[in-house]
Length: 129
Image 1 (tube, rainbow, N blue to C red):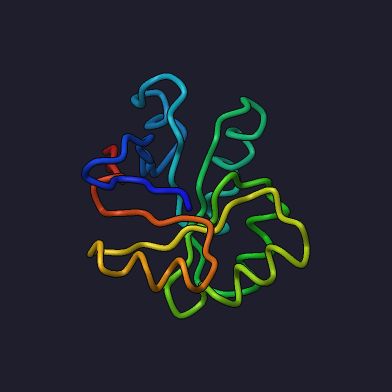
Image 2: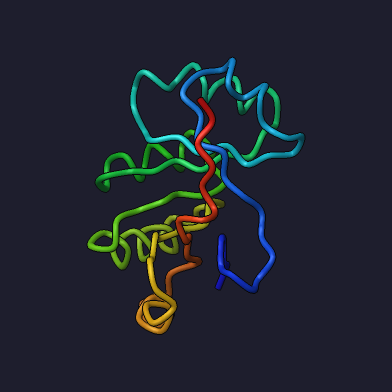
């Protein structure tokens, strides 16, 4: 299981950006965090052209499929979608890892039993404005 933002496991941070200009404000080799939205397609294209790792937060199965096709490195899903998303990712051999946001360490066991690739704690997401 991948851990992002856990208090005693060192990990990379995700930098939540809103446009291409804010990407320039992130540290080198950052992982960019975006919510899937058609308005963000130019940012996603920029990230792919420049080989910048990124995470897409999706709300449904259709967006999950788009995230994989758009070559996201990580796909952040809501807990209610996690089990289905993980199954689809394994069935279609996604390169992306499925991540779920959790608030408490006690949730790790449940996520592990679901077979989800990783967890994100709030501390792992840095908003860039």
